[in-house]
Length: 206
Image (cartoon, rainbow, N blue to C red; front, side, top):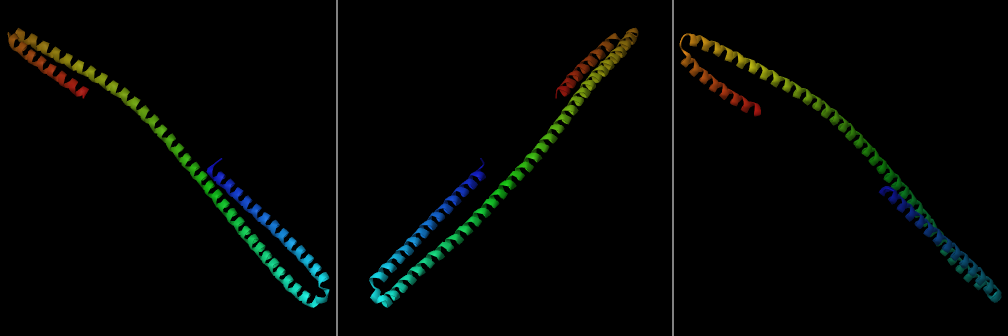
């Protein structure tokens, strides 16, 4: 049971107790009125029988007394009508509050449904974007591997061509009695290539 339903049940319980108390007061008032009227009638009969000789004076006093009781009864009637009006207004207020509470509860449910729907849609869009990024990452990784393999192959072919060219030069210079110069140049070339390899490895690692 939700908090709103608990509040509505409490309001219903308070309203029922309030109506019950009004009904009990009304029954007590009716009983009191009945007792007063019966007592009045009994007193009138007793006084009429006992004071027949003083009928005029007794009748006057009885009329005054009767009028007083009638005024009191009218007052009770007015009070009961007032209580009925108060009860009616109270019931209207309770019905209005119940309607407002129900309306607020339904509005909150609708707002909750809208928020959940938008969050779910956003979650799905994020999943789709994540899958696309993963696919693009795999494609880029494959391309990177292919590029590295091609670079390595071209580098090896280039080094092999350079070595062949130098060997041809060595043979040429050896034929012209310049082997020492060729050897010195070859050492310098090897040192330069070794330095380039180390530099290339550092760049690749970075």
